[in-house]
Image 1: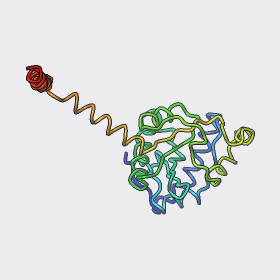
Image 2: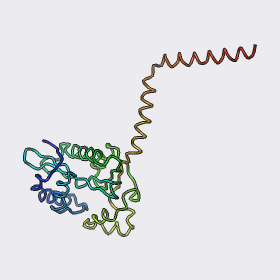
Image 3: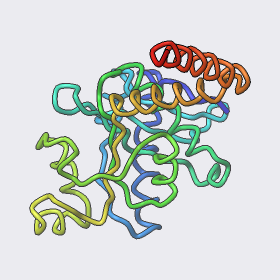
Length: 216
């Protein structure tokens, strides 16, 4: 099994990918935005997708969408062929496309909307946090993609504020601050307790000595 960045040589899988996505949504009874083979091929040609292959057999797929002039990116269309489900492949694909997104759009906020608990768990492990739809891109072209979803009427009735999907967001700026704070704490933990106590004792001795001279 290999997970690689897709290119135009993988265009022959596009129709199969779209059919697998549609069939999966039908089986689960959930809403999902429809994709066309032409759209999927465009993602492959632009280097904005990853594909999982077992030899020449299609195993899984996911692609990147950029919104708001690259301020936001979404990892969409995650699908695993039925023959490979339950093997942890979805997580591997999600990790691969997330890594690719961070490398290609390092300053962008990465987001997604999903109804799947398994995807929510993977997103959470990657650093995504649940947010309101107002925290996501306001690019109208993104929300137009929801028009083919069976739940689109809910999105309309709520004026695009909520739906059955949960919005999740990875903010690189916030995550870097958390990592920096965490690194400081780790360094503090690594400090030799005896050395720290000794340093404290020396300081106390010096200050007490100064105070004693003042009293004299």
